[in-house]
Length: 347
Ligand code: NAD
Image 1 (cartoon, protein in one colour):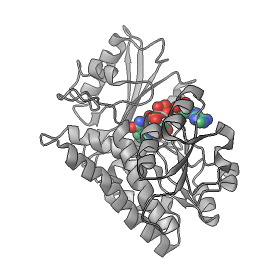
Image 2 (tube, protein in one colour):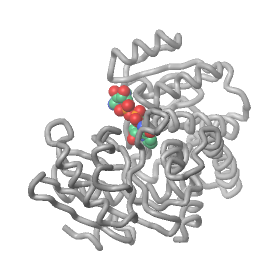
Image 3 (cartoon, protein in one colour):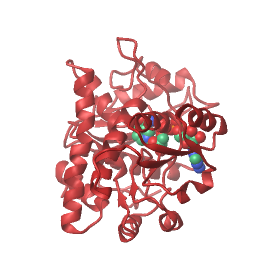
Protein backbone atom coordinates (compact mmCIF):
# COMPACT_ATOMS: atom_id res chain seq x y z
CA UNK A 1 0.00 0.00 0.00
CA UNK A 2 1.86 3.11 -1.19
CA UNK A 3 1.69 6.14 1.11
CA UNK A 4 4.08 8.79 -0.24
CA UNK A 5 3.10 7.81 -3.80
CA UNK A 6 -0.61 7.50 -3.02
CA UNK A 7 -2.72 9.56 -5.51
CA UNK A 8 -4.34 11.41 -2.58
CA UNK A 9 -1.09 12.08 -0.74
CA UNK A 10 -0.67 15.87 -0.69
CA UNK A 11 2.47 16.22 1.43
CA UNK A 12 0.51 15.37 4.56
CA UNK A 13 2.70 16.26 7.52
CA UNK A 14 2.06 13.12 9.50
CA UNK A 15 0.19 9.85 9.00
CA UNK A 16 -0.09 7.64 12.06
CA UNK A 17 -1.25 4.04 12.07
CA UNK A 18 -2.41 2.93 15.52
CA UNK A 19 -3.44 -0.43 16.89
CA UNK A 20 -4.44 -1.90 20.23
CA UNK A 21 -4.57 -5.66 20.66
CA UNK A 22 -6.88 -5.69 23.67
CA UNK A 23 -9.67 -3.62 22.11
CA UNK A 24 -9.04 -4.53 18.47
CA UNK A 25 -8.40 -0.91 17.49
CA UNK A 26 -7.13 -0.37 13.95
CA UNK A 27 -6.97 3.35 13.23
CA UNK A 28 -5.28 5.91 11.01
CA UNK A 29 -4.83 9.58 11.86
CA UNK A 30 -3.78 11.89 9.04
CA UNK A 31 -2.50 15.40 9.72
CA UNK A 32 -2.49 17.29 6.45
CA UNK A 33 -1.31 20.71 7.51
CA UNK A 34 -0.70 22.60 10.76
CA UNK A 35 0.55 25.93 9.38
CA UNK A 36 -2.51 27.73 10.79
CA UNK A 37 -2.72 25.72 14.01
CA UNK A 38 -3.44 22.21 15.34
CA UNK A 39 -5.21 19.89 12.92
CA UNK A 40 -8.91 19.58 13.76
CA UNK A 41 -11.10 16.98 12.09
CA UNK A 42 -13.68 14.36 12.93
CA UNK A 43 -13.31 10.67 13.66
CA UNK A 44 -15.03 8.41 11.14
CA UNK A 45 -15.80 4.85 12.24
CA UNK A 46 -16.61 2.71 9.24
CA UNK A 47 -16.17 -0.95 8.20
CA UNK A 48 -13.84 -0.14 5.30
CA UNK A 49 -13.47 -2.98 2.80
CA UNK A 50 -9.67 -2.65 2.98
CA UNK A 51 -6.89 -0.73 4.70
CA UNK A 52 -6.23 0.95 1.35
CA UNK A 53 -9.82 2.30 1.28
CA UNK A 54 -9.42 3.63 4.84
CA UNK A 55 -6.14 5.33 3.91
CA UNK A 56 -7.69 6.94 0.82
CA UNK A 57 -10.58 8.27 2.89
CA UNK A 58 -8.43 9.70 5.69
CA UNK A 59 -6.00 11.35 3.24
CA UNK A 60 -8.85 13.04 1.34
CA UNK A 61 -10.82 14.04 4.41
CA UNK A 62 -7.84 15.49 6.29
CA UNK A 63 -6.81 17.55 3.27
CA UNK A 64 -10.38 18.84 2.99
CA UNK A 65 -10.25 20.02 6.60
CA UNK A 66 -7.21 22.23 5.88
CA UNK A 67 -9.26 23.95 3.16
CA UNK A 68 -12.36 24.22 5.35
CA UNK A 69 -10.57 25.69 8.38
CA UNK A 70 -8.59 28.14 6.27
CA UNK A 71 -11.71 29.44 4.49
CA UNK A 72 -13.52 29.71 7.84
CA UNK A 73 -10.66 31.89 9.07
CA UNK A 74 -9.85 29.56 11.95
CA UNK A 75 -6.47 29.21 13.66
CA UNK A 76 -6.56 25.52 12.83
CA UNK A 77 -5.08 23.08 10.36
CA UNK A 78 -6.55 20.01 8.74
CA UNK A 79 -6.65 16.47 10.07
CA UNK A 80 -8.96 13.50 10.26
CA UNK A 81 -9.05 10.04 11.83
CA UNK A 82 -10.63 6.76 10.82
CA UNK A 83 -11.22 3.56 12.75
CA UNK A 84 -11.74 0.43 10.65
CA UNK A 85 -14.77 -1.05 12.43
CA UNK A 86 -18.52 -1.36 12.17
CA UNK A 87 -19.88 1.33 14.52
CA UNK A 88 -23.05 -0.69 15.14
CA UNK A 89 -21.33 -3.85 16.35
CA UNK A 90 -17.65 -3.17 17.08
CA UNK A 91 -17.66 0.20 18.85
CA UNK A 92 -16.83 -0.42 22.51
CA UNK A 93 -15.71 1.90 25.33
CA UNK A 94 -12.34 0.09 25.33
CA UNK A 95 -11.92 0.77 21.60
CA UNK A 96 -12.77 4.45 22.05
CA UNK A 97 -10.42 4.84 25.01
CA UNK A 98 -7.62 3.22 22.99
CA UNK A 99 -8.39 5.78 20.26
CA UNK A 100 -8.18 8.51 22.91
CA UNK A 101 -4.71 7.28 23.88
CA UNK A 102 -3.63 7.40 20.24
CA UNK A 103 -4.91 10.98 19.91
CA UNK A 104 -3.15 11.87 23.19
CA UNK A 105 0.15 10.45 21.90
CA UNK A 106 0.21 13.21 19.26
CA UNK A 107 0.40 15.85 21.99
CA UNK A 108 -2.34 18.12 20.62
CA UNK A 109 -1.19 18.22 16.98
CA UNK A 110 -4.52 16.54 16.16
CA UNK A 111 -7.88 17.37 17.77
CA UNK A 112 -10.70 14.91 17.22
CA UNK A 113 -14.49 15.43 17.00
CA UNK A 114 -17.65 13.67 15.75
CA UNK A 115 -18.05 12.37 12.24
CA UNK A 116 -20.11 9.60 10.72
CA UNK A 117 -20.07 6.56 12.98
CA UNK A 118 -19.03 8.55 16.06
CA UNK A 119 -21.34 10.44 18.39
CA UNK A 120 -21.08 13.04 21.12
CA UNK A 121 -21.29 10.22 23.70
CA UNK A 122 -18.30 8.57 22.00
CA UNK A 123 -16.37 11.83 22.30
CA UNK A 124 -17.08 11.81 26.06
CA UNK A 125 -15.50 8.35 26.27
CA UNK A 126 -12.51 9.39 24.17
CA UNK A 127 -12.12 12.43 26.43
CA UNK A 128 -11.38 10.04 29.33
CA UNK A 129 -8.01 9.42 27.64
CA UNK A 130 -7.21 12.75 26.00
CA UNK A 131 -7.97 16.46 26.32
CA UNK A 132 -7.74 16.94 22.57
CA UNK A 133 -11.45 16.49 21.81
CA UNK A 134 -14.04 18.91 20.38
CA UNK A 135 -17.79 18.59 19.94
CA UNK A 136 -18.54 17.89 23.60
CA UNK A 137 -21.66 18.89 25.54
CA UNK A 138 -21.08 22.33 26.99
CA UNK A 139 -21.20 23.19 30.70
CA UNK A 140 -24.56 24.89 30.02
CA UNK A 141 -25.91 21.44 29.15
CA UNK A 142 -26.39 22.45 25.52
CA UNK A 143 -25.84 19.60 23.09
CA UNK A 144 -22.48 19.39 21.34
CA UNK A 145 -24.28 18.55 18.07
CA UNK A 146 -22.71 20.79 15.39
CA UNK A 147 -25.62 20.40 12.93
CA UNK A 148 -27.62 23.54 13.89
CA UNK A 149 -24.47 25.62 13.43
CA UNK A 150 -23.70 23.94 10.11
CA UNK A 151 -27.25 24.62 8.96
CA UNK A 152 -27.01 28.30 9.95
CA UNK A 153 -23.78 28.58 7.94
CA UNK A 154 -25.39 26.97 4.89
CA UNK A 155 -28.30 29.41 5.21
CA UNK A 156 -25.87 32.37 5.24
CA UNK A 157 -23.99 30.84 2.27
CA UNK A 158 -27.23 30.37 0.37
CA UNK A 159 -28.18 34.04 0.81
CA UNK A 160 -24.81 35.07 -0.68
CA UNK A 161 -25.19 32.59 -3.56
CA UNK A 162 -28.70 33.87 -4.31
CA UNK A 163 -27.39 37.46 -4.33
CA UNK A 164 -24.66 36.60 -6.81
CA UNK A 165 -26.43 33.94 -8.86
CA UNK A 166 -29.94 35.35 -9.02
CA UNK A 167 -29.35 39.02 -8.23
CA UNK A 168 -31.80 39.16 -5.36
CA UNK A 169 -31.40 40.06 -1.71
CA UNK A 170 -34.42 38.47 -0.07
CA UNK A 171 -35.60 34.87 0.03
CA UNK A 172 -39.34 35.61 0.00
CA UNK A 173 -40.94 33.33 -2.58
CA UNK A 174 -37.58 31.76 -3.56
CA UNK A 175 -37.94 28.05 -4.31
CA UNK A 176 -35.41 25.60 -2.86
CA UNK A 177 -35.11 21.83 -3.30
CA UNK A 178 -33.42 20.11 -0.35
CA UNK A 179 -32.00 16.62 -0.80
CA UNK A 180 -31.81 15.01 2.65
CA UNK A 181 -33.74 16.28 5.68
CA UNK A 182 -31.49 14.80 8.36
CA UNK A 183 -29.66 16.76 11.05
CA UNK A 184 -28.57 19.64 8.84
CA UNK A 185 -31.22 19.54 6.11
CA UNK A 186 -34.13 19.84 8.55
CA UNK A 187 -32.64 22.86 10.34
CA UNK A 188 -31.87 24.48 6.98
CA UNK A 189 -35.45 23.88 5.83
CA UNK A 190 -36.81 25.65 8.92
CA UNK A 191 -34.54 28.69 8.38
CA UNK A 192 -35.62 28.91 4.74
CA UNK A 193 -39.28 28.50 5.63
CA UNK A 194 -39.00 31.30 8.20
CA UNK A 195 -37.45 33.51 5.49
CA UNK A 196 -40.44 32.92 3.20
CA UNK A 197 -38.97 30.36 0.81
CA UNK A 198 -41.07 27.67 -0.92
CA UNK A 199 -39.60 24.22 -0.27
CA UNK A 200 -39.42 20.96 -2.20
CA UNK A 201 -38.02 18.19 0.01
CA UNK A 202 -36.83 14.64 -0.39
CA UNK A 203 -35.32 11.91 1.75
CA UNK A 204 -35.02 8.13 1.60
CA UNK A 205 -36.42 8.20 5.13
CA UNK A 206 -40.12 8.49 4.28
CA UNK A 207 -41.20 9.14 7.88
CA UNK A 208 -38.81 12.05 8.42
CA UNK A 209 -39.77 13.46 5.02
CA UNK A 210 -43.51 13.33 5.62
CA UNK A 211 -43.22 14.90 9.08
CA UNK A 212 -41.11 17.84 7.96
CA UNK A 213 -43.13 18.45 4.79
CA UNK A 214 -46.32 18.63 6.88
CA UNK A 215 -44.71 20.89 9.47
CA UNK A 216 -43.50 23.38 6.86
CA UNK A 217 -46.19 23.03 4.22
CA UNK A 218 -43.48 21.84 1.81
CA UNK A 219 -43.82 19.58 -1.24
CA UNK A 220 -42.36 16.10 -0.64
CA UNK A 221 -40.98 14.32 -3.72
CA UNK A 222 -39.34 10.95 -4.45
CA UNK A 223 -35.52 10.91 -4.09
CA UNK A 224 -34.92 10.28 -7.81
CA UNK A 225 -36.97 13.30 -8.95
CA UNK A 226 -35.43 16.01 -6.75
CA UNK A 227 -32.98 17.05 -9.49
CA UNK A 228 -35.85 17.82 -11.90
CA UNK A 229 -37.68 20.08 -9.44
CA UNK A 230 -38.41 23.47 -11.00
CA UNK A 231 -36.72 25.53 -8.33
CA UNK A 232 -34.23 28.38 -8.00
CA UNK A 233 -31.81 26.57 -5.66
CA UNK A 234 -30.72 22.96 -5.19
CA UNK A 235 -29.40 22.19 -1.70
CA UNK A 236 -27.60 18.82 -1.43
CA UNK A 237 -27.72 17.81 2.24
CA UNK A 238 -27.49 14.02 2.00
CA UNK A 239 -24.34 12.41 0.62
CA UNK A 240 -21.21 13.26 -1.36
CA UNK A 241 -20.48 12.99 -5.11
CA UNK A 242 -24.09 13.86 -5.94
CA UNK A 243 -23.14 16.29 -8.73
CA UNK A 244 -22.17 13.88 -11.49
CA UNK A 245 -22.52 14.40 -15.23
CA UNK A 246 -26.13 13.31 -15.49
CA UNK A 247 -27.31 15.32 -12.47
CA UNK A 248 -25.51 18.46 -13.67
CA UNK A 249 -27.29 18.15 -17.04
CA UNK A 250 -30.69 17.62 -15.39
CA UNK A 251 -30.68 20.39 -12.78
CA UNK A 252 -33.32 23.08 -13.23
CA UNK A 253 -31.92 25.20 -10.38
CA UNK A 254 -29.58 28.12 -11.15
CA UNK A 255 -27.81 27.93 -7.78
CA UNK A 256 -26.36 24.95 -5.88
CA UNK A 257 -25.69 25.43 -2.18
CA UNK A 258 -25.87 22.69 0.45
CA UNK A 259 -24.22 20.99 3.40
CA UNK A 260 -22.99 17.71 1.91
CA UNK A 261 -19.24 17.18 1.81
CA UNK A 262 -17.48 16.58 -1.53
CA UNK A 263 -20.54 17.31 -3.68
CA UNK A 264 -18.63 17.33 -6.99
CA UNK A 265 -18.26 13.77 -8.34
CA UNK A 266 -15.12 14.97 -10.16
CA UNK A 267 -13.39 18.38 -10.20
CA UNK A 268 -14.50 18.82 -13.83
CA UNK A 269 -18.12 19.09 -12.68
CA UNK A 270 -17.38 22.64 -11.45
CA UNK A 271 -16.78 23.76 -15.06
CA UNK A 272 -19.84 21.84 -16.31
CA UNK A 273 -22.04 23.66 -13.80
CA UNK A 274 -20.54 26.97 -14.86
CA UNK A 275 -21.13 26.18 -18.53
CA UNK A 276 -24.81 25.56 -17.73
CA UNK A 277 -25.04 28.92 -15.96
CA UNK A 278 -25.43 27.33 -12.52
CA UNK A 279 -23.62 29.02 -9.63
CA UNK A 280 -21.92 26.38 -7.46
CA UNK A 281 -21.17 27.19 -3.81
CA UNK A 282 -17.98 25.37 -2.74
CA UNK A 283 -19.15 22.84 -0.14
CA UNK A 284 -16.33 23.22 2.35
CA UNK A 285 -16.94 26.97 2.53
CA UNK A 286 -20.72 26.62 2.96
CA UNK A 287 -20.69 23.82 5.54
CA UNK A 288 -18.05 25.18 7.96
CA UNK A 289 -20.52 26.36 10.63
CA UNK A 290 -20.06 23.25 12.76
CA UNK A 291 -16.29 23.40 12.76
CA UNK A 292 -16.39 27.12 13.56
CA UNK A 293 -18.46 26.38 16.66
CA UNK A 294 -16.16 23.53 17.72
CA UNK A 295 -13.18 25.87 17.33
CA UNK A 296 -14.87 28.44 19.59
CA UNK A 297 -15.37 25.80 22.27
CA UNK A 298 -11.59 25.73 22.66
CA UNK A 299 -11.54 29.40 23.66
CA UNK A 300 -12.06 30.77 27.17
CA UNK A 301 -14.27 33.59 25.84
CA UNK A 302 -16.93 31.34 24.20
CA UNK A 303 -19.90 33.52 23.38
CA UNK A 304 -22.84 32.29 21.37
CA UNK A 305 -23.53 35.55 19.58
CA UNK A 306 -19.85 35.86 18.60
CA UNK A 307 -20.02 32.29 17.26
CA UNK A 308 -23.08 33.18 15.17
CA UNK A 309 -21.32 36.32 13.86
CA UNK A 310 -18.31 34.24 12.88
CA UNK A 311 -20.58 31.78 11.06
CA UNK A 312 -22.35 34.63 9.27
CA UNK A 313 -18.87 35.58 7.98
CA UNK A 314 -19.24 32.60 5.63
CA UNK A 315 -21.55 34.85 3.60
CA UNK A 316 -18.94 37.62 3.45
CA UNK A 317 -16.22 35.17 2.41
CA UNK A 318 -18.48 33.89 -0.35
CA UNK A 319 -19.30 37.43 -1.53
CA UNK A 320 -15.55 37.93 -2.09
CA UNK A 321 -15.12 34.48 -3.63
CA UNK A 322 -18.05 34.78 -6.07
CA UNK A 323 -16.93 38.28 -7.12
CA UNK A 324 -13.39 37.02 -7.80
CA UNK A 325 -14.71 34.01 -9.73
CA UNK A 326 -16.85 36.31 -11.90
CA UNK A 327 -13.92 38.68 -12.50
CA UNK A 328 -11.53 35.89 -13.44
CA UNK A 329 -14.23 33.93 -15.32
CA UNK A 330 -13.41 30.68 -13.54
CA UNK A 331 -15.50 28.43 -11.31
CA UNK A 332 -16.02 29.32 -7.64
CA UNK A 333 -14.56 25.88 -6.78
CA UNK A 334 -11.24 26.80 -8.37
CA UNK A 335 -11.16 30.17 -6.60
CA UNK A 336 -11.99 28.54 -3.25
CA UNK A 337 -9.10 26.09 -3.61
CA UNK A 338 -6.71 28.91 -4.55
CA UNK A 339 -7.87 31.17 -1.69
CA UNK A 340 -7.58 28.32 0.83
CA UNK A 341 -4.07 27.40 -0.28
CA UNK A 342 -3.03 31.05 -0.06
CA UNK A 343 -4.40 31.09 3.49
CA UNK A 344 -2.57 27.99 4.71
CA UNK A 345 0.58 28.96 2.91
CA UNK A 346 0.83 26.40 0.12
CA UNK A 347 0.38 28.41 -3.06
P1 NAD B 1 -27.79 12.94 8.40
O1 NAD B 1 -27.37 11.53 8.25
O2 NAD B 1 -28.44 13.38 9.66
O3 NAD B 1 -28.80 13.35 7.21
C1 NAD B 1 -28.66 12.89 5.90
C2 NAD B 1 -30.05 12.61 5.40
O4 NAD B 1 -29.96 12.27 4.01
C3 NAD B 1 -30.73 11.43 6.10
O5 NAD B 1 -32.02 11.82 6.55
C4 NAD B 1 -30.80 10.35 5.02
O6 NAD B 1 -31.94 9.54 5.14
C5 NAD B 1 -30.85 11.19 3.76
N1 NAD B 1 -30.41 10.50 2.54
C6 NAD B 1 -29.44 9.58 2.39
N2 NAD B 1 -29.36 9.19 1.11
C7 NAD B 1 -30.30 9.89 0.44
C8 NAD B 1 -30.70 9.93 -0.92
N3 NAD B 1 -30.13 9.17 -1.85
N4 NAD B 1 -31.70 10.77 -1.27
C9 NAD B 1 -32.31 11.54 -0.34
N5 NAD B 1 -31.97 11.54 0.97
C10 NAD B 1 -30.97 10.73 1.34
O7 NAD B 1 -26.49 13.81 8.08
P2 NAD B 1 -26.27 15.34 8.41
O8 NAD B 1 -25.50 15.46 9.68
O9 NAD B 1 -27.54 16.08 8.23
O10 NAD B 1 -25.26 15.74 7.23
C11 NAD B 1 -25.73 15.89 5.91
C12 NAD B 1 -24.53 16.11 4.98
O11 NAD B 1 -23.81 17.27 5.39
C13 NAD B 1 -23.51 14.97 4.99
O12 NAD B 1 -22.96 14.86 3.70
C14 NAD B 1 -22.45 15.45 5.96
O13 NAD B 1 -21.18 14.89 5.68
C15 NAD B 1 -22.46 16.93 5.67
N6 NAD B 1 -21.98 17.75 6.80
C16 NAD B 1 -22.62 17.68 7.99
C17 NAD B 1 -22.17 18.46 9.05
C18 NAD B 1 -22.87 18.45 10.38
O14 NAD B 1 -22.64 19.35 11.20
N7 NAD B 1 -23.74 17.48 10.64
C19 NAD B 1 -21.07 19.33 8.87
C20 NAD B 1 -20.46 19.39 7.62
C21 NAD B 1 -20.92 18.59 6.59
